[in-house]
Length: 282
Ligand SMILES: Nc1nc2c(ncn2[C@@H]2O[C@H](COP(=O)(O)OP(=O)(O)OP(=O)(O)O)[C@@H](O)[C@H]2O)c(=O)[nH]1
Ligand SMILES: [Mg+2]
Image (tube, helix red, strand yellow):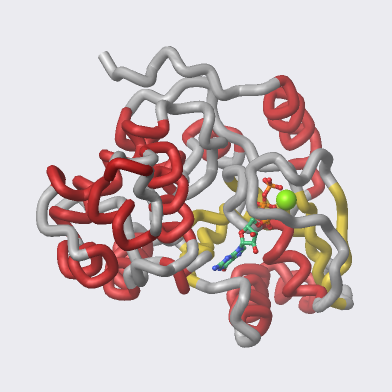
């Protein structure tokens, strides 16, 4: 049985949001599932996918500036091989809106053509922006409107309610609060969500999250740990981070809590380079 199975990170507002999403879906033409490019699999909410299974879906891997570019390409190819619509973006990139509008227009083309043949004008189409907490939904919408129309912040749970926003004469978006699912079946998924900041740091034991991250990096990106902290093995990892980042106490003791936070801040803010924590099934 999975160790974190018992962790219940499903606050009342997520339950409420799922119910509201279900109601709003009838108004929506396309659903954007915003995924975190660092964890394209772990950021897929199975309950959300069940809910939207009858709608056209565009998968957008956001935060690609923080991910391993090569892995992002492989994931996009894998989505396409499965016949799914998928693109990767960084919401901080000025070219993002053009790329997204193009992908959405392409998905809407058959419907618009049918309308035009009947002598009807193009439809103002409605797009639901869905995804896990902190994946960047509101930032993405603000970048598309080029205005700060919805509140953002680097912590899960910023958006509290559904909100329609016109981004373009022809496109309306529905911002939604991030939703997770009631139980984590797989420990790795829970750890990946914690590592990347989709669930609050106090939900899982921080030492376990950090050690999981360190072990994964030692295995997958050893050179980045060597370069930043001079870490060569898991045994000296905490001491090396404490030394390099100034978290040694009197007498040479390690301020462990500080090390955990410093490491997570580095990892989440690109100080360790582009990292991807999910691997494609081969
Ligand atoms: N580096 C990087 N940071 C991003 C990107 N998109 C969003 N962010 C950051 O991610 C954090 C969360 O962004 P929000 O837009 O508030 O996320 P959200 O999905 O609306 O979160 P909730 O409303 O809590 O569900 C903010 O600090 C953003 O600046 C991106 O493409 N790259
Ligand atoms: Mg938000």
